Image 1 (cartoon, helix red, strand yellow):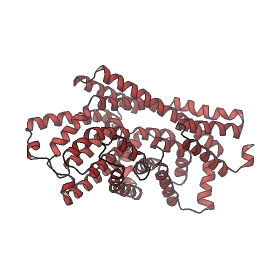
Image 2 (image 1 turned 90 degrees about the vertical axis):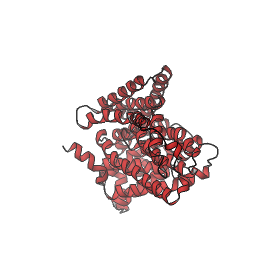
Image 3 (image 1 turned 45 degrees about the vertical axis):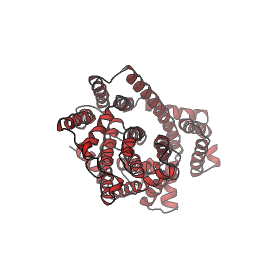
Image 4 (image 1 turned 120 degrees about the horizontal axis):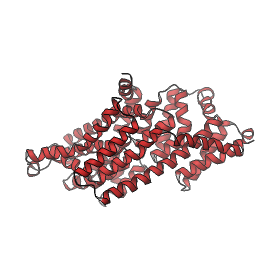
Length: 445
């Protein structure tokens, strides 16, 4: 009956408008998405429409790779709560303190390894703001420079594997998680290298922004340097222990995630840092974040099932390509711009589950590779996070930064790094093989 009164395009627009209105009123993301999906299912198909969302939710519960989520989250919290990240920063401090901007460059290296430990950008932000930021400020680094470094470095958290967000994208887009992870490796390392290059050039031109450490601080015995190198590279060993069997096909994705979690736990025990408090915090946080992701996934899947049943994707595709005559690349660019707009008030997970029922099938219908698009999505959402005036990460940084760093400093600090990220995004859009080469190589063997 409801379909007789409105066209498919109008129903789709009305669904999104209603959902956005609920989000603006402060409703929880999963509640807004799930409620709108259920209500429209009943309005479109009567009481039997509720079976659509229920069936979709049951399919999610049977999706075996979903077990990787709590494993990777637990691994990340064990490594961070047991202060293994502190060892990482000490290693970069000793080995790179003699370079202009060396501690800032080391902070980017810290963020890359933290990303490989956790897979969440918020974790990188928290570790950078609590460990690196006070040290950089105390040693005379420019406050705007270091604030931008930490925000930019934390953006690598959802791109460098094991990315939790890419696991969610894999579920919604029905794409292999392993291929998505491998697709994020080269772009993530490329973006980190671009950050390092920018810092090195900027500090070479303006040495006062990133002074070298004093000779006394750099005068550390080689034995101590090697000890810190061994301690700091422990997360790398854990990461390789987990990823090498998976890439070579010896273990499944879930088995590799279990290996990573167990290796991190054993490492913390052997270092004498697995206290009862560390274990309790790690388990509690793992349970809380896993449950949050599960509710969002269930709501998004139900919403997407209603959208598929409505046929709205085909209608929107027809509207853009046939009626408006837009080029596929123009449609893709408009999608990316809409992510930047939504990023002013939503986090990456919320953006994904809200637009995935529309964007992902449309991207496939336009002839683009969905693995490649997953990488574009992650980079674009991080740009959105850091774009003034309302970027999510900007206010998160303000909450963690010391009082001498104002919101104006945070805004101005991130603009150069946003430009670097936009350049990286353009490169990957222009040369898709930057993202696709590694998964093609590994899975093509």
